[in-house]
Amino acid sequence: MRVLITGAAGFIGAALADALLARGDSVIGIDNCNDYYDPALKFDRIARVRENGGDFTFHQLDFADMAAVEAALGGAEFDSIVHLGAQAGVRYSLENPAAYVQSNLVGHANMLEVARHRGVAHMVYASSSSVYGGNEKLPFSVDDRADHPVSLYAATKRADEMLSESYAHLYRIPLTGLRFFTVYGPWGRPDMAMWIFTRKILAGEPIPVFNKGEMWRDFTYIDDIIAGVVAALDNPPADDGKVKAGGSSKPHALYNIGNHRSEKLTRLIELIGEACGREVAIDWQPMQKGDVTRTYADIEAIQRDLGYAPTTSIDVGVPRFVEWYREYTGA
Ligand SMILES: NC(=O)c1ccc[n+]([C@@H]2O[C@H](COP(=O)([O-])OP(=O)(O)OC[C@H]3O[C@@H](n4cnc5c(N)ncnc54)[C@H](O)[C@@H]3O)[C@@H](O)[C@H]2O)c1
Image (cartoon, rainbow, N blue to C red; front, side):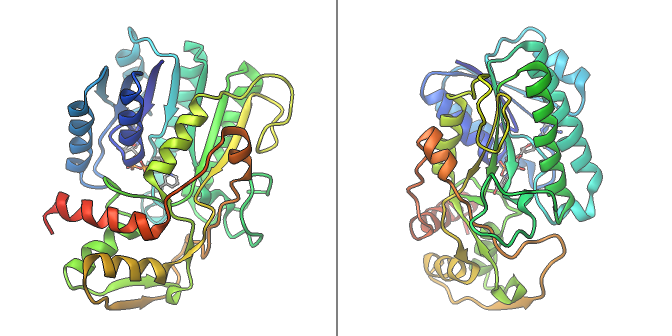
């Protein structure tokens, strides 16, 4: 299969490129390698993908710029798209909303247009657990309403699902939206709690913990996520009028992709402290605007339709992340 991956220099995109190349697929990657976090890590990921071998081409471009997309992809052939590129991060959406509108709204609409005009067999795209906002019914199910986002980031991801639904209806493009739940692991993101906590603990600095530690997250290890993305890619929803996960009767499915375990943040901190072999000092902070206290994925739909079965608990995954972090950063 020939697959176009957007956000290929990102945490999940680069890991997906590795997995697809390893099974013999051809991969075209695009990413603008922006400086939301250190672009050196993005270039290192691309170098790693290249070193692993296989049929990989990479274009550094902004997918919110349709002319640039068309110029780069003009002569390229691909069967499917996995659209992972986005302006990620909940808190930064309060600081720089324009980045979210450009990448997540204009960019998503552009990728739907590419899917439409190139007649691709399937486009899988990234959504987020944040679409559930402050829902109190747990675990979060794809059948629950998700109409009350508490951040602009969440609103753009929910809007992407709506734009996709209209394209599945109008142009019958098979589309699968994946609501990721806090992904972590080697080659992860420096803006996320696991990286920040590890960096500060190793530097002997207190770590900021919000809402007095009364926070829970469904942490999902990168290898489990990639297994789920690949299973989704290989199983496009049929245009058969039957109701799909998430409620669409068009060829559009929505899945949660989490670990189905909601872990208290203080447990995560203990594990990082143990893996670092350091005492942990905590700087208690109030709840942050835009944040949610709890995420917890109901993964019944993805288990049933795609055989997804996460296997990595944080007890196993956190030490793996810390080991990689120390090797990569030399800390
Ligand atoms: N990691 C998580 O816990 C998590 C949770 C929920 C949802 N997601 C979603 O999953 C996807 C992948 O996340 P990630 O953790 O790999 O994030 P990431 O930031 O590491 O990767 C996203 C990549 O997209 C690129 N990008 C952003 N805007 C672009 C544009 N306009 N043109 C071209 N490239 C652009 C960035 O440079 C980056 O490399 C994102 O859509 C994110 O919103 C991630």
